[in-house]
Amino acid sequence: MTPRHLLVVDDDPLVHQSLKLVLPPHWRMISIETLAEIGQIAAVHGQTSFHAAFVDMHLSANEKGEGLRAIERITTFWPLAEVFGISGDQALDLMENALQSGARRFLSKPILSEEIHSTLQKVAALWSLREAGRWIGSSPASQYVLRRVADLQGESGTVLIEGETGCGKEVIAQLLNRQDSRSPRPFVPVNLGAIPESLFESEMFGHLRGAFTGADSSRTGLAEAANGGDLFLDEIEACPLPQQVKLLRFLESGEIRRVGAKEPLHLKVRIIAATNRSLLGLVKQGKFREDLYFRLCTHRITLPPLRDRSTDIEDLCLHFLATHPRGKRKVLATDALVKLRNHAWPGNVRELKRVCEQLPLSRLPIVRACDVDELLTVPAENPTAANNLELGLAPLLAQYECEILRKALRRSDGEVDKASQLLNISRSSLYKKMKDYDIEV
Image 1 (cartoon, rainbow, N blue to C red):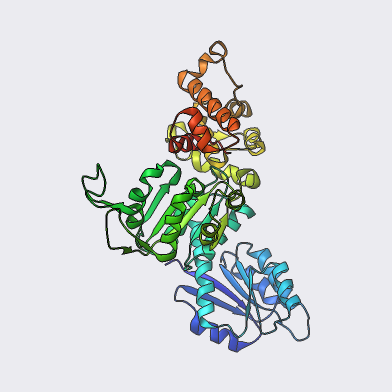
Image 2: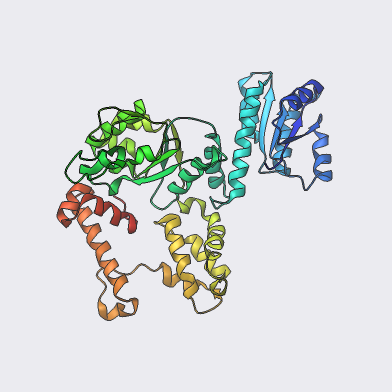
């Protein structure tokens, strides 16, 4: 396991001795007693990246506020370090001042060994997430997301991931799945919008042979396939009300019954749900069960849209461009990057990825602002063949289909059921097409 470094700033030698006794094996501790020593440590160990720091709030009896200044100095030298204020003083203003100075949390002395282990376990999880590079970006919004994921290290209960279409909800679900164990745990993604209502129980909970017409063999359901791991329910808002009752029963009891079976099966599955709509708003409209909503959001992670973390766009572009074959890789000119940063990105990261997939087609090794402009330009509605033959047939058909879908949804006031009837396609097909075209209602 990667060694982690903890800086402890406390004028009580017993605190240092106690912490050293209970420190997890892969943690290394450096102890100092004064504010002045922080600068000395930075000068001598400038290359050492401290992953966490414990700072006593009353470092000096003669100098009030030494602890707060120590926190500020540490966050200046090591901005990514997770800093924790520690003290036996429970004064509310002291704790709030510690947070305002840059502390992540406040721990009360004497600190129990269980709390030390839990705290450092979450810090290690955060750094592992940063180093893994699965979530690209170092903006404050991105770091907040990673901290929320790390905070769920070792926690039980369902997780609700909220965010606009294309902002990375499944990526976060996969990170949650991988962080709790060294060995792989089952991860079963399910798009609820793609499951026909009549097949919900069979798909989700499985069935026995002969349970219904066409059941020629027994089948394991998605929930059972996720036993011992995570069941990722994407587009949870698409789950019909009658099926929400069955899902709630499974969440509350952990039991399923295969279609045609008499005996229930008890599973150990964590539910991670995702939505691009306000479930609370749907509850108020009577379209989502309130009891299921509260059951789902034991823990909640809200993902920022790409426009709120525009400083991550360069890193994301470099990541996507690096996936191209070496001979097709491009370099972004400064003005091209400015264009990308100023774009609204209604499709979020998914839209940016699609743009980056087309950048290798630009004529020069360096991508210019004009090249980006061509990819970001939204074609007018009802494009004529005379003006758009150069696009090819497939893009024209896709534009036309997208326009028809949007019109049907507008005419049905965003009601997916009504829109699917207008279009004479299944509800699940409409949800899939909406996802393909980044259409929200």
